[in-house]
Length: 266
Image 1: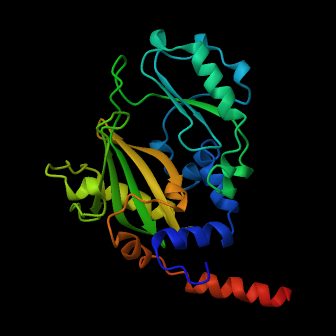
Image 2: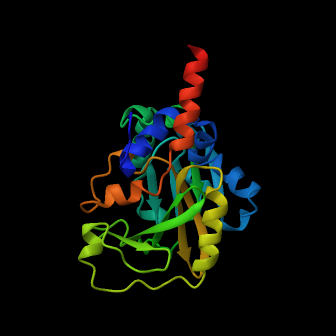
């Protein structure tokens, strides 16, 4: 941590030393909606059906036939329901109770999660009822308010899931094994420029953030803002990529500011 060089090392430094007040709000899957609205992008928010603070308050009768449940205080705490008739409601309730009692911040040492109030939100399912195929996930790595790298997730929710990395010019770059072995093509979203503009606007307040979108029926939808991808210990990058991506993060000013504050306290 004295001299972080790689992407993971620098993210770890930011996690430990940078103020995380706004990061906490924007990690909260409920409160981040206000941040998106304030940025002028309310049109990309997925329809919100319900918000629950207690699992026992959930009444499946008041929910539509398809939906997605998300716990606001963790990552991967999601229930995807393409058809309510086939949902195991008992299993779902038990899973949600387990997640709601989990302090996600201690699993991989991500302290900003500890300040999030546990809630359950229910959003629209992007897809066709009875069809569990999920839309492509476009994750945009933004450094100092500038979008640089796409991590496009294909075949989400299946064993064939692939992470294909591309530059902002939509060229595949061999940053993961999936990318190196990828022989096909990925259709460029017609609204790619609009997506990049949104990513730049939503990332301008942060040293680093990954801005996630879905593209469904030619519309852009907001996914989430991620500040510690892979909990800052991501090992899926190809050899040397951790160093290449690290060069995109300049911590000089932040490190000097942190050092100055320490000297003042002394």
